[in-house]
Structures are given as C-alpha cells and as structure tokens.
Length: 298
Ligand code: PLP
Image 1: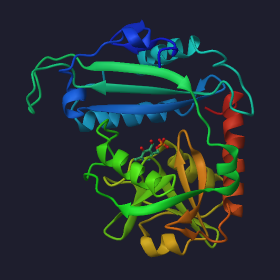
Image 2 (image 1 turned 135 degrees about the vertical axis):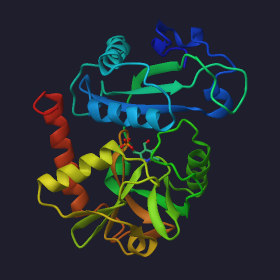
Image 3 (image 1 turned 180 degrees about the vertical axis):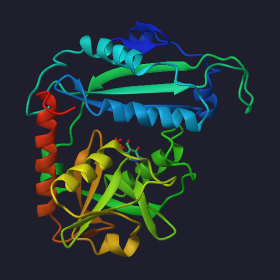
Image 4 (image 1 turned 90 degrees about the horizontal axis):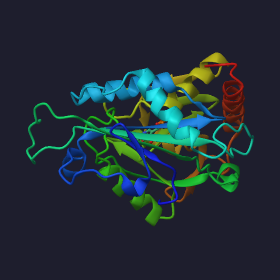
C-alpha cells in the first residue's frame, strides 16, 4: 500500500500513509456511504457519465448530497491518474490501464444512528493499476457456486456496506470457485460483485433492473452492444432452473469485463468451455473499448 501514489482525501492529495480518517467517521462506524469503481482504459475514464449518474442515484437514495460536480470529480480523477506511471498508454495487454475507486461517507459525528446535522461528507479516492483476469480464466472460464442472496433489499444502492457480499464471495472462494451466484426466491439476482448473463439458444438473458441488483455499467454496455448487433437480449427474471440449463453463463463487471463461468456447483455449464456467444460478444466489447481508447466513441 505504501508505494501507492498519492490518494485524494477531503480536498488534499496525500501519500496513503498520511491520509487519515476519524474513527468516528460514519463510514467506519455504520458503513454509511457510497462508492464507485471506474475503469480507465488508455488513459480515458470509461463510461464516466454513467458511473457519475449511478453515484448521484446512490447518494440520493441515502439522502447524501453529492459533494462534487461532474467537472470537479473529473479534475480529481485526472490528477490521480496523472501521477500513475503509463496511465495514458494504449496497449492491447492492458498495461497502463487503471481503475479509480471513490467513496463518499456521511462524515464524522458522535455515534448515533440518526443523521447528524451540518456534517461535511468524507470524500476519498485513489487510482490503481487494473488487474485483468488471468488469460487462462478467459480461455477456460471460471467456477461459480449458487448461494442464497442474503443481502438487504436495496442492492441497487452502491453501498460501502459490503459485509454480505464479502461473506458470499469468501464462501465461493472456499469452495474453489471465483464467484457466488446469488439466488433470491428461486430467481438469480446477480453475483457477489458482478452481474450475471445466461445464454440459451443464442438469446441473452439477464435480471431486470430493480432493487435486487446493482445496475452494472458493464451489464448495460453488454445489453447495448447486443441491441446494436441484432443479438436477442431479454431483461427478465432468470430462474435457477434456467441458470442450470443454460448453454453459457457469464459474469460482468468493470474490472472482470465479461468473464465466462463454465462450472456451476461442480457441474459443467453447456459444454464446460467458454461458448461461441461469449467469443462474439467479447470481441464486440473489445472493439468498442478500442474505439473508446482511440476517441471514436464516448
Ligand atoms: N453487482 C455487484 C454487486 C457489484 O459489486 C458489481 C461491481 O462491483 C457489479 C454488479 C458490476 O457493476 P459494474 O459493471 O458497474 O462494475
């Protein structure tokens, strides 16, 4: 951690070991805050307006005022990236790609569940190199397990309170899997830190937006790319039976991109290898990403 470049905290850019937050910060005491993770490809913030819109929606949902305008956020991210080595590199291998993590908490106050009055939110952000999935995971896919979705019923809020997600992901890891696929009342919601797509007879299917899933920016992009390329894509409830009978299953997130899941609960998905629809969608996604890096799309 200490060799990380400077982080942003409440208006200052500091080495991480000099950045200090009060033990009475409501983020620390209650998990009372919101976060975002924004990928940076070839030095450009990918889908920034969408990430900032989701941030705004999450802050509004917990009744916290957005402390910065879009322009101010951009300024913070740009300065964080400027100190990163090779943040502006455009390479096929991903070298030089980064992610921005940001969080806003309700600030520092004496411990009381009720909101404090006139408290300044705590704002923290940093940039770090983006760790891509190892090539063998893309080539072979990863394993997942299904688990009961034990989270609360406002999963659309990108809350920093991630205890349930951490427990579920850890449970998956301990079962030799990379992700937990969460199931609520027999319906697949999403992954512990990803959205889930299934493919059946060349049609994509993913959970509809609502309070039981995070509206993933990568999910939306996959839906958009499918739409633009005449690939059928339904946003409808995915039953556990449909998951188990799928030809292909993928997880999507800003850092995992579109990763095939080829084993679920110890059983192969389809043929047990990444499928042709993944190859097609991922190629289209990479094309889009390259166009973005070259400034051809926003
Ligand atoms: N769902 C959950 C619970 C997540 O934590 C994440 C990302 O971390 C996602 C979905 C994917 O969202 P995005 O594509 O915006 O990264």
